[in-house]
Image (cartoon, rainbow, N blue to C red; front, top):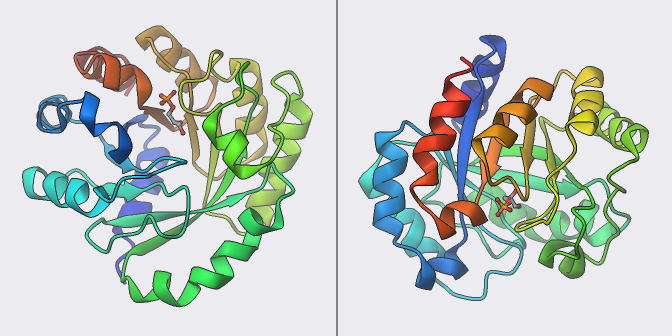
Length: 248
Ligand code: 1GP
């Protein structure tokens, strides 16, 4: 099993290079031009493409990943809302444990059930401490996961949760305000978390401007994930890529 994607993330962090990931939700394809998004991602040298969503109700995952892989060499990471959102066509699987919540199914239960299938997939498995942060409005992921997000002003809880995840051996920490969040994660919280961990830090949810992406990178995010805003305006890929890569 290759370890290329995680090594790539670690190398970027070592070189203090900030990265940009575009999130593609297979359910939203009706509204977006996938090929156009891929072309822009290639043109503006996006670092990663995440594919998934908290409620994938269509069966297009396989097809979407195949189309991306055919069109480019950008690493494709699955960001699954449930164990059935897995295809061996991707490069790696973000193997999420929802450490901000207290729903045992999403901490370990579903992992146990899907373990043989996940291993068999041959995907590079990257364990992730996934932390939901209150983004000011109930999101699909908080509803579906049946968990409470960490309050946006509780920086200490976020930092302790991330530290615990790191000490448990999780390879990445992902702070997410949820797709389409009203409020992105406050920079002070990102700063507090980044100060306490060495693990690469992914930040997403409700980021809609290059300014916010820059602010979050400066606060300590290593990878910025944007989905919703790009679905609405694919041209934003250029502006955000310039902003994030301009820091490197
Ligand atoms: C959601 O972090 C991602 O899980 C991206 O969020 O769709 O709001 O950009 P947006």
